[in-house]
Every structure is written in C-alpha cells, then in structure tokens.
Length: 487
Image (tube, rainbow, N blue to C red):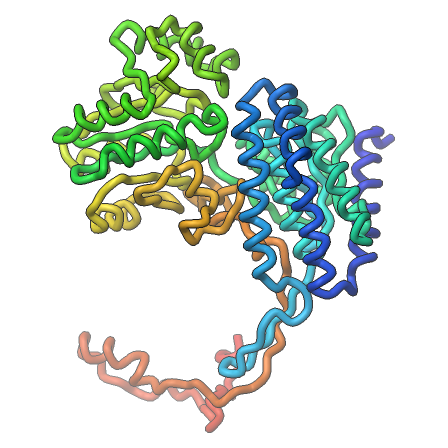
C-alpha cells in the first residue's frame, strides 16, 4: 500500500497538471501578469518583513534586515529579467536561418529549497516556473517549512487576484520527508535543487531531468594595485550580509605579499577583527568540533561568535579574520564556513595567489566562483582562463554580484550552476531558459555549403595530403544523395 505522503505527492502533481491546463492558451501578457503578482506577494513591504522575521525565527539563521533586502532585491531583479523575455508562443524568427522558435512549458517543476533562504529562493523559482507556463511544487527544508508555506500562500492569493489558478504554486505538506521529496523528484517533469549536495545527487539519480547547484566556498584575491579600501568595504559588506548564509559569501581572502599588511589594515578599518594566535586556535577548534560545522555559531550575529570564541572584538567589529598558513584537506577553515569567519592567506606573488585559489577550490567550491580586486584586467582574464569556475567577479562585492546585479550582466538568481566540475548540468546562473521547451520551425534557405577545399584545405596544405575525390555524389542544392550524409 502506498504511504499517505506518497499519495499526497501524486495528488499534488495531478492538481499541478490541471492548473497548467487552465493556462495553456494564455498569451504572454497574461503570463507576465501572473508573474508580477507572485513577485509582488514577496516584494510588498509588509510581506517582505513578515517573511524575513519568520525565516529567522524558524531557522535561527541570518538576520531580519538582510533577509528583507534579499526578499526584495532578488525578486525585483528577477522580475526585471523575466519581463524582458518571451516564453510562450512565437519567441523569435530569423529569416537568415529560416528558423522560428516557439516556447512550450517544461511541465511540473519540483523544487527542493534550502533553509538559508526559505522565502526568497522558493518564490523566485516559482516566478521562473510560471513565466514558462509551468506549475511548481516546493519541497522546503523542514526547518524552513512554515516560512515557505506562508510565502506560497501569499503567492497563491496573488495568483487568484489576477485570475490565475492558485495551484500553480504548491508546497509539500509538513512534515516534509525524504520519502516524499524523492517521490516528487520522480513524478515531476523537471527537478531543481538548491542546497544539500545529497539532494543534488538524489535529483540526478531520480531519472527526471534535473538542475542542481554546487557547493559554494568563494576565494577572493586582493592583488597588487587594487584599491584596498574599496576592496575591504566590498568584502565586508558581502561577508557580513545575512550573517554569511549566502553560497556566494567570501570564505577566503588571498592577499599578495607586497600589499598584505596594508590590505589587512584596510579590512580592519572596514570592520574586520584580526584574531591573535590563541584566538585563531579557538576559532579553528570551536567552529569545527570533531570536524563538523558547529551549528551554534553558523549564520549567527557576530556578538555570538565573539562570546563563543572569547574574542577581544569590540562593537565596531563585524566578523573575524583568521590567518592560515595554507589551504588543505586537513585544515577545516579552508572550506565553507557559513559564518562570520574569513580565512586569510598570504601569497608571495600573483602566481602563488592563483595556486592558493586553486588549492581552496580543490578542497571545496570547484565550479562555483572566485573574485579578484585588481587594476589589471589581464590578471582577471588569467583567472577566467585557468581556474575551473563558472564565474570570476572583478572588483565586486561577491554576494551581491554573483547571483546577478544591476551593475553586471549576470541573470538574477538564487541558484548558481557550477558545471560538470561540481557535477551540475548547467554552467550558468539559473534563468528562464531552463524553464521552457523550444519547438523549432525550420524552412529552407539559400544553400550554405562550402567546398571541400574550404574545410579541408588547411589540413591538406599543412600535411601534404594529396586530395582525391571522396566519390560522394552531390547535387546542386548542397544536399548529399548518399545515406551516409543524412546519418
């Protein structure tokens, strides 16, 4: 006999399909109005504050003011991106290629969402799903369920206010079990996973097309010639935002030797506390007792860390810097810390800084992103050329830039794909293109067929190959009459 939780998943998927059928003939304007409504359900000031307060109360992580910013800024930016895109009906037509593209839904989206962002992540995914005329079923972290459920209820009310089915957005009932989450992965048409790497792997094993994201652990280089005070302010703003819950929060800073002390001074002026030797040891052991992150200090206010680690920090300090000799698997501070703790490494020169960055990524964070503060674009280009990451941010506050910003060209998102380096199916920010199927209408055009000499000539010339006809019978339209050419 099927358990009640699995029956509930089956019922919700059927309800979601019925909701999609109800909007199957909607035009782009109607779809966009539904997306606007869902966005406003989180962006509206009273809702943004209520859901931020509820998230902190539910999960014990982050702080209310920053979660309000996250609820509103990400939603506003995502809505901007979505309203600029076509997703239903004719998307575009290129007479030069003879191809017209038509947008179609991907189907029922199953979205597994984390406790770090129990309102912003699910609602932003819901906006993207509905933009593609899909329905979404949310599987939140148990710790964040009540926040996600409240946010979804507001979204459902907003959908009804514009004549859209409320059931385009649903939430798995509490308590959310692994059994129900896995069943959703199996029954949905597309699975999105933000959060636990175990859930990401389970999604890829589910047999359903899946998009997962990799683990964050951002290393950032401060290079010779950087504007040190600007870098320090941006790193401090980014590191302390929502008590370092973001996967894009700086976890390590690597400083070249010739500006090391000046950069450390700038970071202290911006609000960092530089731990002494004994204090650094207490942070190392207290943050990772028995090798596991201490849940009593992750994503907590700095006052909590100051007391827990017995630091001599004052009210002017916002996070602690621990100077490390080198990255390594045996040094826990190399990895993601989800707390107001920043590891600092001293590099002899830029070559060494690149190598230290690579070593950090090898421990954790490969595929995700790195940052650099520099006045030398060639050095940023080197990182982009050599390192196995999807994003390299230059002179930016990483948390605010990595998931899209008004002053860079990345799409707004709370889910960052990390490529095959991290076992992900996408190497870009999650965006609307991942929420639609595309039908291609293909008409004939003037033949575009080069000669054999055009394609093989450089090879023949460089190797001395004597060309002989391949014997393939070609007609004047450029279409081969042999079956092999059509294979």
